Image (cartoon, rainbow, N blue to C red; front, top):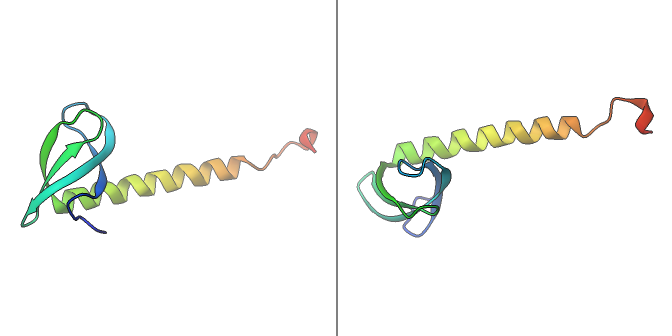
Length: 80
């Protein structure tokens, strides 16, 4: 997963509390300066934390989409 300046990653903002994309502004070693796209609040975040949060969010989204897809098939014969 690319963590280059200019890219975005989902992260929970410490200021506004929203799970929003954060734009990566710069990096030094494994620390990243990120800016929340919701409130423009900045933070310094470890690269491992950014990657882990993104992976967890993607897994949760995948589970939600699977549940919605399972609910798309009607089980009641009245709908046929």
